[in-house]
Amino acid sequence: MVNDDISAALGGSAIRPGDPDWDAARRFHSGIGDPALIVRASSVEDVRSAVALAAREGLEIMVRGGGHSAWGTLPGGATIDIAALDDVTLDGTRVRVGGGARWGDVARLLSSRGLGLSSGDTASVGVGGLTLGGGIGLMVRAWGLACDQLVGAQVVTAAGDVVEVDDVAQPELMWALRGGGGNFGVVTRFDFEAHPLTAVVAGELGIESDARPVLRAMRDLLPHAPRELTLTYMDVPPMDPSAPAGASIAVVWAGDDENAARAAIAPLLATPGVVPRDLGLRAYPDILLDGPEFDPDAPMPGFVGGNTLLPRLDDDAIERLAAFREANAASVLLLRSLGGAYGDVPPDVSAFPAREATWFAMAGAFDVPGLLDAAGRARALDDWQAIEARGAGVYGNFTTSTDQSWVERMYAPPTLARLAEVKRTWDPGNVFSRNHNVRPA
Image (cartoon, rainbow, N blue to C red; front, side, top):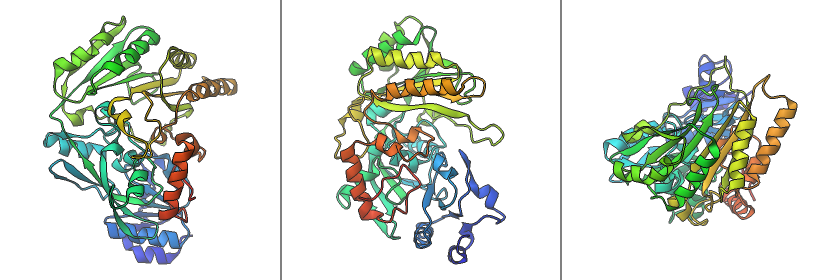
Protein backbone atom coordinates (compact mmCIF):
# COMPACT_ATOMS: atom_id res chain seq x y z
CA MET A 1 0.00 0.00 0.00
CA VAL A 2 1.32 3.40 -0.95
CA ASN A 3 1.93 5.77 1.93
CA ASP A 4 -1.00 8.17 2.37
CA ASP A 5 1.50 11.03 2.67
CA ILE A 6 2.19 10.72 -1.06
CA SER A 7 -1.45 11.17 -1.99
CA ALA A 8 -1.80 14.04 0.46
CA ALA A 9 1.29 15.80 -0.88
CA LEU A 10 0.27 15.42 -4.51
CA GLY A 11 -3.40 16.20 -4.05
CA GLY A 12 -5.80 15.18 -6.80
CA SER A 13 -3.02 14.28 -9.21
CA ALA A 14 -2.28 11.06 -7.30
CA ILE A 15 -4.50 8.06 -8.11
CA ARG A 16 -4.37 4.74 -6.28
CA PRO A 17 -6.16 1.39 -6.61
CA GLY A 18 -9.75 1.80 -5.50
CA ASP A 19 -9.98 5.48 -6.44
CA PRO A 20 -12.83 6.41 -8.81
CA ASP A 21 -10.47 7.25 -11.68
CA TRP A 22 -8.26 4.21 -11.21
CA ASP A 23 -9.48 2.02 -14.06
CA ALA A 24 -9.30 4.87 -16.57
CA ALA A 25 -5.90 6.04 -15.33
CA ARG A 26 -4.21 2.65 -15.54
CA ARG A 27 -5.32 2.01 -19.10
CA PHE A 28 -2.93 3.30 -21.76
CA HIS A 29 -2.46 3.00 -25.51
CA SER A 30 -0.78 -0.40 -25.44
CA GLY A 31 -2.24 -2.10 -22.41
CA ILE A 32 -3.52 -1.97 -18.84
CA GLY A 33 -1.14 -1.38 -15.97
CA ASP A 34 -1.24 -2.32 -12.31
CA PRO A 35 1.10 0.13 -10.57
CA ALA A 36 0.94 1.06 -6.91
CA LEU A 37 0.44 4.72 -7.78
CA ILE A 38 -0.29 6.87 -10.82
CA VAL A 39 0.53 10.57 -10.82
CA ARG A 40 -1.02 12.75 -13.50
CA ALA A 41 1.46 15.60 -13.74
CA SER A 42 0.25 18.90 -15.16
CA SER A 43 3.43 20.90 -14.47
CA VAL A 44 7.14 20.47 -14.01
CA GLU A 45 6.60 21.07 -10.30
CA ASP A 46 4.17 18.13 -10.22
CA VAL A 47 6.87 15.96 -11.77
CA ARG A 48 9.44 17.13 -9.23
CA SER A 49 7.14 16.34 -6.32
CA ALA A 50 6.22 12.93 -7.72
CA VAL A 51 9.83 11.94 -8.34
CA ALA A 52 10.98 13.07 -4.91
CA LEU A 53 8.15 11.31 -3.08
CA ALA A 54 8.38 8.10 -5.10
CA ALA A 55 12.14 7.97 -4.54
CA ARG A 56 11.63 8.52 -0.80
CA GLU A 57 9.12 5.66 -0.67
CA GLY A 58 11.34 3.31 -2.66
CA LEU A 59 8.99 3.12 -5.66
CA GLU A 60 10.49 2.44 -9.07
CA ILE A 61 9.35 5.03 -11.60
CA MET A 62 7.84 4.48 -15.04
CA VAL A 63 7.26 7.60 -17.14
CA ARG A 64 4.25 7.57 -19.47
CA GLY A 65 3.90 9.94 -22.40
CA GLY A 66 2.28 8.50 -25.53
CA GLY A 67 1.70 5.17 -23.79
CA HIS A 68 3.11 2.82 -26.44
CA SER A 69 5.66 1.22 -24.13
CA ALA A 70 5.31 -2.28 -22.74
CA TRP A 71 6.90 -1.15 -19.45
CA GLY A 72 3.53 0.17 -18.30
CA THR A 73 2.29 -3.40 -17.90
CA LEU A 74 4.71 -4.25 -15.09
CA PRO A 75 3.03 -4.39 -11.65
CA GLY A 76 3.96 -2.11 -8.78
CA GLY A 77 6.01 1.06 -8.82
CA ALA A 78 4.89 4.59 -9.59
CA THR A 79 3.69 5.70 -13.01
CA ILE A 80 4.20 9.39 -13.73
CA ASP A 81 1.82 10.33 -16.55
CA ILE A 82 3.13 13.45 -18.30
CA ALA A 83 0.63 13.47 -21.17
CA ALA A 84 -0.59 16.91 -20.08
CA LEU A 85 2.88 18.39 -20.69
CA ASP A 86 2.21 18.60 -24.41
CA ASP A 87 2.91 22.21 -25.41
CA VAL A 88 4.69 22.68 -28.73
CA THR A 89 6.23 26.08 -29.50
CA LEU A 90 8.42 27.41 -32.30
CA ASP A 91 11.19 30.01 -32.33
CA GLY A 92 12.42 30.13 -35.91
CA THR A 93 13.53 26.56 -36.62
CA ARG A 94 13.92 25.69 -32.93
CA VAL A 95 10.93 23.68 -31.73
CA ARG A 96 10.35 23.12 -28.03
CA VAL A 97 8.17 20.12 -27.27
CA GLY A 98 6.64 19.11 -23.95
CA GLY A 99 7.68 15.68 -22.75
CA GLY A 100 4.13 14.34 -23.04
CA ALA A 101 3.45 15.52 -26.60
CA ARG A 102 2.76 13.14 -29.46
CA TRP A 103 4.32 13.25 -32.89
CA GLY A 104 1.09 13.98 -34.74
CA ASP A 105 0.68 17.27 -32.85
CA VAL A 106 4.30 18.22 -33.51
CA ALA A 107 4.00 17.40 -37.20
CA ARG A 108 0.87 19.50 -37.63
CA LEU A 109 2.44 22.60 -36.12
CA LEU A 110 5.69 22.19 -38.03
CA SER A 111 3.88 21.58 -41.30
CA SER A 112 1.91 24.82 -40.88
CA ARG A 113 5.24 26.67 -40.76
CA GLY A 114 6.94 24.82 -43.62
CA LEU A 115 9.14 22.72 -41.33
CA GLY A 116 9.69 19.05 -40.53
CA LEU A 117 11.57 16.54 -38.40
CA SER A 118 12.40 12.90 -38.94
CA SER A 119 10.10 11.48 -36.29
CA GLY A 120 8.44 8.10 -35.87
CA ASP A 121 5.91 6.36 -38.10
CA THR A 122 2.83 6.82 -35.93
CA ALA A 123 0.99 10.01 -34.96
CA SER A 124 0.02 8.78 -31.49
CA VAL A 125 3.56 7.79 -30.47
CA GLY A 126 5.02 9.96 -27.72
CA VAL A 127 7.88 12.29 -28.53
CA GLY A 128 9.70 11.32 -25.33
CA GLY A 129 9.94 7.55 -25.61
CA LEU A 130 10.73 7.59 -29.30
CA THR A 131 13.46 10.23 -29.02
CA LEU A 132 15.15 8.81 -25.94
CA GLY A 133 15.27 5.41 -27.66
CA GLY A 134 16.69 6.88 -30.88
CA GLY A 135 13.80 7.22 -33.31
CA ILE A 136 14.24 5.55 -36.73
CA GLY A 137 11.75 7.64 -38.67
CA LEU A 138 10.44 7.90 -42.20
CA MET A 139 13.08 10.47 -43.18
CA VAL A 140 16.02 8.90 -41.39
CA ARG A 141 18.38 9.07 -44.38
CA ALA A 142 17.71 12.79 -44.83
CA TRP A 143 18.10 13.96 -41.23
CA GLY A 144 19.11 11.00 -39.10
CA LEU A 145 17.32 9.77 -36.01
CA ALA A 146 14.86 11.80 -33.96
CA CYS A 147 17.55 12.03 -31.28
CA ASP A 148 20.05 13.38 -33.82
CA GLN A 149 17.88 16.49 -34.16
CA LEU A 150 17.75 16.96 -30.38
CA VAL A 151 19.75 20.02 -29.28
CA GLY A 152 18.59 20.47 -25.70
CA ALA A 153 16.29 19.20 -22.96
CA GLN A 154 14.86 19.94 -19.54
CA VAL A 155 15.23 17.01 -17.14
CA VAL A 156 13.84 16.34 -13.68
CA THR A 157 16.48 14.19 -12.01
CA ALA A 158 16.17 11.46 -9.40
CA ALA A 159 17.10 14.06 -6.79
CA GLY A 160 14.12 16.20 -7.85
CA ASP A 161 16.28 18.88 -9.48
CA VAL A 162 15.32 20.57 -12.75
CA VAL A 163 18.33 20.61 -15.05
CA GLU A 164 18.74 22.32 -18.42
CA VAL A 165 20.80 20.10 -20.69
CA ASP A 166 22.67 20.70 -23.95
CA ASP A 167 26.06 19.91 -25.47
CA VAL A 168 27.73 22.69 -23.47
CA ALA A 169 25.96 22.66 -20.11
CA GLN A 170 25.81 18.88 -19.54
CA PRO A 171 27.52 17.16 -22.48
CA GLU A 172 27.62 13.63 -21.01
CA LEU A 173 23.95 13.68 -20.08
CA MET A 174 23.11 15.12 -23.50
CA TRP A 175 25.03 12.26 -25.13
CA ALA A 176 23.09 9.72 -23.02
CA LEU A 177 19.69 11.23 -23.81
CA ARG A 178 20.37 10.64 -27.52
CA GLY A 179 19.52 6.95 -27.52
CA GLY A 180 20.15 5.87 -23.91
CA GLY A 181 16.47 5.58 -23.03
CA GLY A 182 14.61 6.88 -20.01
CA ASN A 183 17.31 5.96 -17.53
CA PHE A 184 18.40 9.40 -16.43
CA GLY A 185 15.31 11.33 -15.36
CA VAL A 186 11.98 12.65 -16.58
CA VAL A 187 12.48 14.75 -19.70
CA THR A 188 9.82 17.43 -19.41
CA ARG A 189 10.88 19.35 -22.54
CA PHE A 190 12.71 18.43 -25.73
CA ASP A 191 14.37 21.05 -27.95
CA PHE A 192 14.80 20.11 -31.61
CA GLU A 193 16.27 21.86 -34.62
CA ALA A 194 13.72 21.50 -37.42
CA HIS A 195 14.33 21.51 -41.18
CA PRO A 196 12.65 23.39 -44.03
CA LEU A 197 9.97 21.11 -45.50
CA THR A 198 7.04 22.30 -47.57
CA ALA A 199 5.81 18.80 -48.48
CA VAL A 200 6.98 15.24 -49.01
CA VAL A 201 6.70 12.89 -51.94
CA ALA A 202 5.26 9.65 -50.60
CA GLY A 203 3.46 6.57 -51.76
CA GLU A 204 3.57 2.84 -52.03
CA LEU A 205 5.04 0.31 -54.42
CA GLY A 206 3.22 -2.99 -54.60
CA ILE A 207 5.19 -6.23 -54.85
CA GLU A 208 3.78 -9.00 -57.01
CA SER A 209 6.81 -11.28 -57.11
CA ASP A 210 9.32 -13.09 -54.94
CA ALA A 211 10.85 -10.86 -52.26
CA ARG A 212 14.47 -11.72 -52.99
CA PRO A 213 15.07 -9.82 -56.25
CA VAL A 214 13.15 -6.84 -54.87
CA LEU A 215 15.25 -6.73 -51.71
CA ARG A 216 18.42 -7.02 -53.78
CA ALA A 217 17.26 -4.14 -55.98
CA MET A 218 16.59 -2.00 -52.91
CA ARG A 219 19.98 -2.86 -51.47
CA ASP A 220 21.78 -1.97 -54.68
CA LEU A 221 19.85 1.27 -55.12
CA LEU A 222 20.24 2.94 -51.73
CA PRO A 223 24.03 3.45 -51.47
CA HIS A 224 23.86 5.76 -54.50
CA ALA A 225 20.43 7.30 -53.92
CA PRO A 226 19.94 10.89 -52.73
CA ARG A 227 19.56 11.25 -48.98
CA GLU A 228 16.06 12.58 -49.38
CA LEU A 229 14.93 9.03 -50.14
CA THR A 230 14.01 6.54 -47.41
CA LEU A 231 12.44 3.19 -48.28
CA THR A 232 10.58 0.75 -46.02
CA TYR A 233 9.80 -2.81 -47.10
CA MET A 234 6.96 -4.53 -45.25
CA ASP A 235 5.28 -7.89 -45.65
CA VAL A 236 2.46 -8.59 -43.22
CA PRO A 237 -0.17 -11.33 -42.86
CA PRO A 238 -3.92 -10.67 -43.05
CA MET A 239 -4.18 -10.72 -39.24
CA ASP A 240 -2.19 -7.51 -38.73
CA PRO A 241 -4.66 -4.57 -38.34
CA SER A 242 -1.99 -1.89 -38.80
CA ALA A 243 -1.31 -2.49 -42.51
CA PRO A 244 -2.88 -4.15 -45.56
CA ALA A 245 -1.85 -7.76 -46.05
CA GLY A 246 0.99 -8.57 -48.41
CA ALA A 247 4.31 -7.07 -49.39
CA SER A 248 4.89 -3.43 -50.29
CA ILE A 249 7.50 -0.68 -50.22
CA ALA A 250 6.72 2.67 -48.59
CA VAL A 251 8.50 5.52 -50.36
CA VAL A 252 9.21 8.80 -48.57
CA TRP A 253 11.15 11.65 -50.20
CA ALA A 254 11.96 14.54 -47.85
CA GLY A 255 10.99 17.38 -50.16
CA ASP A 256 8.51 18.40 -52.82
CA ASP A 257 10.50 17.52 -55.97
CA GLU A 258 8.33 14.76 -57.39
CA ASN A 259 10.44 14.40 -60.53
CA ALA A 260 13.59 13.85 -58.47
CA ALA A 261 11.82 11.29 -56.31
CA ARG A 262 10.58 9.35 -59.31
CA ALA A 263 14.02 9.43 -60.89
CA ALA A 264 15.56 8.10 -57.68
CA ILE A 265 13.28 5.05 -57.56
CA ALA A 266 13.33 4.38 -61.32
CA PRO A 267 15.76 1.42 -60.98
CA LEU A 268 13.45 -0.13 -58.41
CA LEU A 269 10.41 0.31 -60.65
CA ALA A 270 12.32 -1.51 -63.38
CA THR A 271 12.45 -4.62 -61.18
CA PRO A 272 9.90 -7.23 -62.33
CA GLY A 273 6.94 -7.44 -59.98
CA VAL A 274 7.27 -3.91 -58.54
CA VAL A 275 4.17 -1.80 -59.24
CA PRO A 276 3.72 1.90 -58.35
CA ARG A 277 0.69 2.83 -56.27
CA ASP A 278 -0.44 6.32 -55.42
CA LEU A 279 2.90 8.16 -55.41
CA GLY A 280 2.59 11.93 -55.07
CA LEU A 281 2.88 15.03 -52.90
CA ARG A 282 1.71 14.76 -49.31
CA ALA A 283 1.66 17.00 -46.28
CA TYR A 284 4.20 15.88 -43.69
CA PRO A 285 1.57 14.97 -41.03
CA ASP A 286 -0.33 12.82 -43.52
CA ILE A 287 2.42 10.23 -43.81
CA LEU A 288 2.17 9.34 -40.11
CA LEU A 289 0.07 6.26 -39.36
CA ASP A 290 -2.72 5.82 -36.83
CA GLY A 291 -1.92 2.75 -34.74
CA PRO A 292 -4.80 0.82 -33.15
CA GLU A 293 -5.17 1.06 -29.38
CA PHE A 294 -5.05 -1.94 -27.08
CA ASP A 295 -8.24 -3.99 -27.12
CA PRO A 296 -8.58 -6.17 -24.00
CA ASP A 297 -11.03 -8.40 -25.86
CA ALA A 298 -8.52 -9.06 -28.65
CA PRO A 299 -4.99 -8.94 -27.22
CA MET A 300 -2.08 -9.24 -29.60
CA PRO A 301 -0.47 -12.70 -29.69
CA GLY A 302 3.09 -13.37 -28.65
CA PHE A 303 5.94 -12.51 -31.02
CA VAL A 304 8.84 -14.85 -31.75
CA GLY A 305 11.61 -12.86 -33.41
CA GLY A 306 13.23 -9.49 -33.00
CA ASN A 307 15.10 -6.75 -34.79
CA THR A 308 18.65 -5.92 -35.72
CA LEU A 309 20.77 -3.16 -37.28
CA LEU A 310 22.52 -4.72 -40.27
CA PRO A 311 25.85 -3.35 -41.49
CA ARG A 312 25.33 -5.27 -44.76
CA LEU A 313 22.23 -6.59 -46.47
CA ASP A 314 24.07 -9.28 -48.41
CA ASP A 315 22.49 -12.13 -50.33
CA ASP A 316 22.64 -14.49 -47.36
CA ALA A 317 20.83 -12.00 -45.09
CA ILE A 318 18.17 -11.50 -47.76
CA GLU A 319 17.72 -15.25 -48.12
CA ARG A 320 17.35 -15.74 -44.37
CA LEU A 321 14.85 -12.90 -44.00
CA ALA A 322 12.73 -14.01 -46.96
CA ALA A 323 12.84 -17.64 -45.83
CA PHE A 324 11.72 -16.64 -42.32
CA ARG A 325 8.63 -14.94 -43.71
CA GLU A 326 7.85 -17.90 -45.98
CA ALA A 327 8.28 -20.45 -43.20
CA ASN A 328 5.77 -18.72 -40.90
CA ALA A 329 2.35 -17.98 -42.35
CA ALA A 330 1.49 -15.57 -39.52
CA SER A 331 4.65 -13.47 -39.52
CA VAL A 332 5.86 -10.00 -40.38
CA LEU A 333 8.99 -8.79 -42.15
CA LEU A 334 10.13 -5.16 -42.17
CA LEU A 335 13.27 -3.48 -43.49
CA ARG A 336 14.05 0.25 -43.46
CA SER A 337 16.96 1.85 -45.27
CA LEU A 338 19.56 3.63 -43.17
CA GLY A 339 22.81 5.29 -44.23
CA GLY A 340 22.87 8.92 -45.30
CA ALA A 341 22.58 11.30 -42.36
CA TYR A 342 22.11 8.35 -39.98
CA GLY A 343 25.64 7.20 -40.71
CA ASP A 344 27.21 10.66 -40.38
CA VAL A 345 26.92 10.77 -36.59
CA PRO A 346 30.09 9.76 -34.72
CA PRO A 347 29.67 7.52 -31.64
CA ASP A 348 30.72 10.23 -29.19
CA VAL A 349 27.69 12.36 -30.15
CA SER A 350 24.94 9.85 -29.28
CA ALA A 351 24.48 6.62 -27.37
CA PHE A 352 22.53 5.02 -30.21
CA PRO A 353 24.40 1.97 -31.53
CA ALA A 354 25.57 0.74 -34.92
CA ARG A 355 26.00 3.87 -37.01
CA GLU A 356 27.68 1.64 -39.58
CA ALA A 357 24.34 -0.11 -40.18
CA THR A 358 22.79 0.34 -43.61
CA TRP A 359 19.47 -1.41 -42.87
CA PHE A 360 17.14 -1.88 -39.95
CA ALA A 361 15.48 -5.30 -40.12
CA MET A 362 12.67 -6.82 -38.07
CA ALA A 363 11.02 -10.22 -38.40
CA GLY A 364 8.79 -12.22 -36.13
CA ALA A 365 6.26 -15.01 -36.10
CA PHE A 366 2.99 -14.38 -34.25
CA ASP A 367 2.41 -17.06 -31.64
CA VAL A 368 -1.09 -18.00 -32.74
CA PRO A 369 -2.56 -21.26 -31.35
CA GLY A 370 -2.91 -23.78 -34.11
CA LEU A 371 -0.31 -22.07 -36.29
CA LEU A 372 2.77 -22.26 -34.06
CA ASP A 373 3.49 -25.16 -31.73
CA ALA A 374 6.50 -25.67 -29.46
CA ALA A 375 8.64 -26.99 -32.29
CA GLY A 376 7.60 -24.08 -34.51
CA ARG A 377 8.47 -21.56 -31.82
CA ALA A 378 11.89 -23.12 -31.31
CA ARG A 379 12.57 -23.14 -35.05
CA ALA A 380 11.45 -19.54 -35.49
CA LEU A 381 13.61 -18.43 -32.59
CA ASP A 382 16.66 -20.26 -33.96
CA ASP A 383 16.09 -18.77 -37.39
CA TRP A 384 15.79 -15.27 -35.97
CA GLN A 385 18.86 -15.59 -33.76
CA ALA A 386 20.90 -16.52 -36.82
CA ILE A 387 19.72 -13.29 -38.46
CA GLU A 388 20.31 -11.11 -35.40
CA ALA A 389 23.83 -12.47 -35.08
CA ARG A 390 24.64 -10.70 -38.37
CA GLY A 391 23.69 -7.33 -36.89
CA ALA A 392 25.62 -4.74 -34.91
CA GLY A 393 22.94 -4.06 -32.29
CA VAL A 394 19.21 -4.02 -31.70
CA TYR A 395 16.71 -1.16 -31.52
CA GLY A 396 14.95 -1.02 -28.16
CA ASN A 397 11.95 0.98 -29.38
CA PHE A 398 10.87 -1.88 -31.65
CA THR A 399 10.31 -4.49 -28.99
CA THR A 400 7.47 -5.21 -26.60
CA SER A 401 9.78 -7.26 -24.39
CA THR A 402 10.49 -6.14 -20.83
CA ASP A 403 13.37 -8.61 -20.55
CA GLN A 404 16.29 -6.68 -19.07
CA SER A 405 18.81 -8.74 -21.04
CA TRP A 406 17.88 -6.64 -24.09
CA VAL A 407 20.06 -3.79 -22.88
CA GLU A 408 23.20 -5.87 -23.46
CA ARG A 409 22.03 -6.60 -27.00
CA MET A 410 21.34 -2.92 -27.64
CA TYR A 411 24.72 -1.41 -26.80
CA ALA A 412 28.34 -2.35 -27.36
CA PRO A 413 30.26 -2.83 -24.07
CA PRO A 414 32.10 0.55 -24.23
CA THR A 415 28.81 2.41 -24.82
CA LEU A 416 27.06 0.52 -22.02
CA ALA A 417 29.94 1.29 -19.66
CA ARG A 418 29.76 4.99 -20.51
CA LEU A 419 25.99 5.00 -19.99
CA ALA A 420 26.49 3.34 -16.61
CA GLU A 421 28.81 6.18 -15.57
CA VAL A 422 26.21 8.77 -16.57
CA LYS A 423 23.60 6.76 -14.69
CA ARG A 424 25.76 6.79 -11.55
CA THR A 425 25.98 10.57 -11.74
CA TRP A 426 22.27 11.27 -12.25
CA ASP A 427 20.41 8.26 -10.81
CA PRO A 428 22.72 6.34 -8.46
CA GLY A 429 19.76 4.65 -6.75
CA ASN A 430 18.33 3.43 -10.08
CA VAL A 431 14.95 5.03 -9.43
CA PHE A 432 14.29 5.16 -13.19
CA SER A 433 14.43 1.43 -13.83
CA ARG A 434 11.18 0.68 -15.69
CA ASN A 435 12.94 0.77 -19.05
CA HIS A 436 15.76 -0.99 -20.88
CA ASN A 437 17.65 -0.46 -17.69
CA VAL A 438 21.23 0.72 -17.50
CA ARG A 439 22.43 0.03 -13.98
CA PRO A 440 24.68 2.59 -12.27
CA ALA A 441 28.41 1.89 -12.55
